[in-house]
Length: 450
Image (cartoon, rainbow, N blue to C red):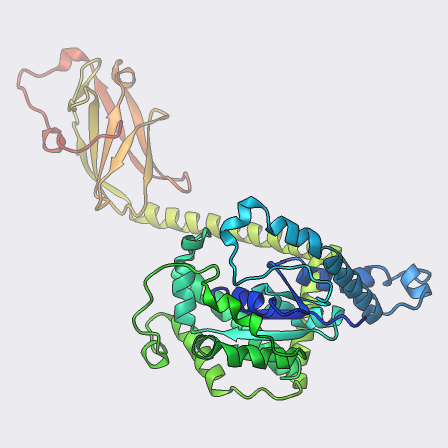
């Protein structure tokens, strides 16, 4: 029996799922939920053949004279048999009470023995048309194209159907990524293998679109395929964007919007796909396929891990260099202009704050980043003003209970390098002057870290 699967490709939120259910109402087409494994299987089949033949003169695959093409086709036949044998289980599970909310009288999900073909509407298949055709040489692909702004808006409100909302840039980039892959498949394999349909045509004339799709895949038209159009399948509810025109978006200030609409404009202008693909695009597909296969091989994984380790080490080196340069620059520019209070007496509070602690202030210049301040080797809680001109320090009583001189050292927080400092003197209590002055009072209102 010929294996002839159908793949609906395009961006998410472009009605790929809807078209899967529509064509799946046909008596010869069984619709699958998004699989996300068949495209990986198609690439892995080629990688498995390579693993089983390279460097092994008496390997099974070489001894049996099994080519890569034959091996991949055999994998496709096995996949096809597994899907067709699983139809009854799939339909039975879909009928369970927990899925009742998804059911509709217009969507028939049956396990008719007449259904000899199956359909997969996983958008990511767009990146694997080359490898899917290697496993299913008679497969057909239907590309659904929708306005990028409508798709992005829907993705940004994806939570309406239970998924995570996309950020705007990611939403547009997702559309561009998948549609670019679809465009490459069109160029590489031509209109005999890939058919493009338009979301606007689905809305305006669904019957005509269904007729064209069924004719493309070699099936007779059946009116039952129009059933899903009577309900909204997996439809998110959100306010539609105002201006979706190419003219209103192609010169947008955001580059990802411009890129998407430039591609959309190009596809709308080039609606005629050549019957056969061109060699340059085919070679690009083959190259991308080879890169993906290599990335999943043991050697590819080792190369990837080596690259990650190298890039991490390089990133750490650059971060260290950046911190050192910043530290050197701060050291060259740093200066303590003034500080206070200058008269601190052993065991006596000074420049008292609202929380009862004592505080020092340093008026500085040349600070370009946060700093660490140590007094006698002890890190002091500090607050750097927003203009980097004043450092306020909380001093614990235990550090000033004995008359002495000790270094107050300022370090760059990132590098830990010393950029400057002063010598702080703790005076004996007997030297307290008769006059009551407080040189630090001007800075009493500064917030102190606690």
